[in-house]
Amino acid sequence: MIRTYPKNFARFYDTIYHHLRDAVDNQYFQNEIKHTSGKVLEIGVGTGRLFLNALNQGADIYGLDISEAMLDVLYKKLQQEQHYRLSLQNIIDFTFDFKFDLVIAPFRVIMHLLDKEEQIKAIDNVYNHLNNKGRFIFDTFIPDLNQLIKGNNNQLDFEGEYDSGQKVRRFVSTYPDLINQTIQVNFHLEWEENNVLNHDDWILPLRFFFRYELEHLIERSKFKKYKIFGDYKGNELNQESKDFIIICQKQEQAMP
Ligand SMILES: C[S@@+](CC[C@H](N)C(=O)[O-])C[C@H]1O[C@@H](n2cnc3c(N)ncnc32)[C@H](O)[C@@H]1O
Image (tube, rainbow, N blue to C red; front, side):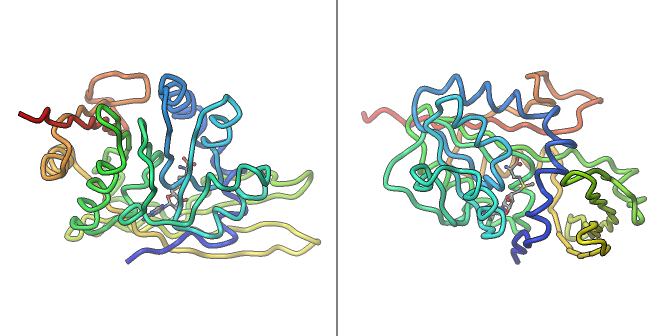
């Protein structure tokens, strides 16, 4: 089951995540893109938090997303002649009639795929769209078991202004489902507009992964070469790691 990001979540995404996430991963992905000479694809491009920066730096970057609401925000920020770079597609079965040297799925895109067959299809589909030696980089959070089981109960995780003097607040509750290996995230948004306090709710299930499951998953895919890092600075996995950063490389066998 896929729940696409709804309109109000897309509307406040930039205000919330430029604040909560940019310092963690933006520089890392910009560097990886900068050091790629060919075409780049961002899967789950969202509102362009990373994409726009890269495009402005001269990258030949494309973006796809399954949420119309998220893409609508990005289309509005993008000059008309660059609109061809975006498409409404699913990671599982997207198609292009050219290939990429780098495909990225930043900020937990793969965690939106709850089912293992969908995950394999998605990873193999990326493989099919890479040039030889091309790389696929994606990330997932490392489950913090205490936090996961304890959950959050309507915790305020963001408060800021989306426009001058106009506040938006986000509250988050989380519920673990250990059998299905998912965490259900309930978002509650409140924002001031025309002297009225508006609100909206949204439920997002995310699939969490452990290290060896990720390894098995990739080893079941078409990728034969991969490495998992423990942060966005290129450090090995260690007890302090908060994210898995998975880099897979396509290696085609030379014909005998
Ligand atoms: C947390 S956001 C990350 C957005 C952007 N990459 C960033 O770093 O800010 C995850 C994005 O993945 C998209 N997404 C979720 N499932 C997808 C799928 N099956 N195919 C393509 N995009 C998907 C969502 O619509 C959302 O825009």
